[in-house]
Length: 183
Image: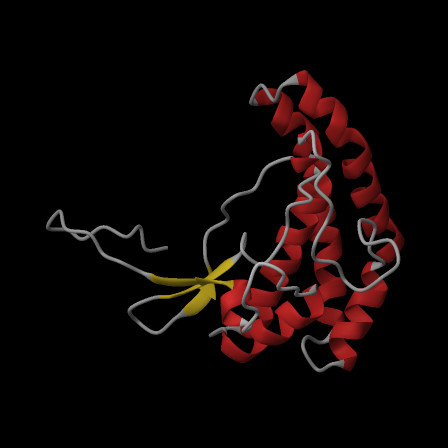
């Protein structure tokens, strides 16, 4: 990953735009769903399949950690000097279920229960739209579930505040259950 610095002490700027801008969703009321986002990532990313899998992984993290503020301005793509187009490093990622105004999940997979996706159906839909072969997503589920299994201990080790830990329990358990159901 390019850290944005040059060896001579200068600054190296990296072209970056929000997923909304990349998808042509302009204005404050712009809306984008995950399928549309994946379709755009397929069209522009240097390695579309890995980029889409990384995008799905980020959504799993949003779900597991209760981050409902998952709109297309909180995800970006970047173009590096060598022409590589990829997701920008993760930013503006927080447990928004703690927000007093009750932030709702903006981007969903087009299912009735937006915070509890049926990952088998997501994989089918991405495959049907020729965005990502179904097996590519389903094959990652055990790996993702394994990575997420250590999340509560990791948060405790890094002194995650008790109120946040208490509020993450339900979204985390729901996320893990959706992965179990998809296996």
